[in-house]
Image 1 (cartoon, rainbow, N blue to C red):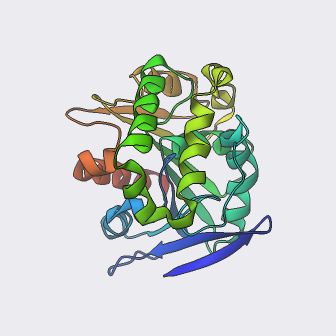
Image 2: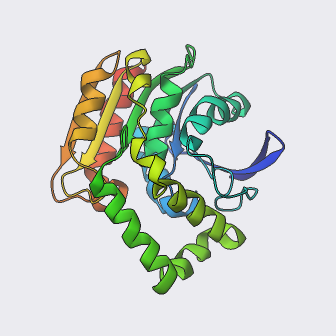
Length: 261
């Protein structure tokens, strides 16, 4: 079911996925997409996750992505902190659930960590990160530079336009210009980690082209609550595409550990 929520005067595209054999629960998994993502780019993963866990899965396109309202660029360099502190709480307050588990990919994982370390309240049960960044790395910058080349002279813009429509340029440049800004080399959200009191599962592919194992190790070492890391072999940055079955099992086990039957 697709709908639009009004948040801070903008419209955000939201879709809810339910399992046929839905569990009796007031908890939903909320997906936070990557820096070039949106609802559509999750493909079939949200429905598969709902079917696997028996929980409702809610995905939304952040401002400037998918069919949501556009956003002005360049984005501020602290846009992920703004999303986690200001926008995620607004979205969660409009959803008809009592409790949430966040599942964030890449930028979405960083946003999930920011929210989790920003006094989220008792409604947040836990957080799953997929290839999240807590600090910048040369490996990430090099891959984002390649993405810029592909957007300007390859087929990347055409491919993204099928999912972002008129938002394609603000989606791409809002992300790309921020990450390639010289000051963004100092990007670091480690200060939020000790303030996270909910359980955290940090997942990354061993062949991730945007980040090293240091990201997972830092999350696990500094998170203030129970934390665990999972490195998946033969897997790159898009874990939900490269290792969907392994990921579904991991999130299912994690969510079950959080919900009192």
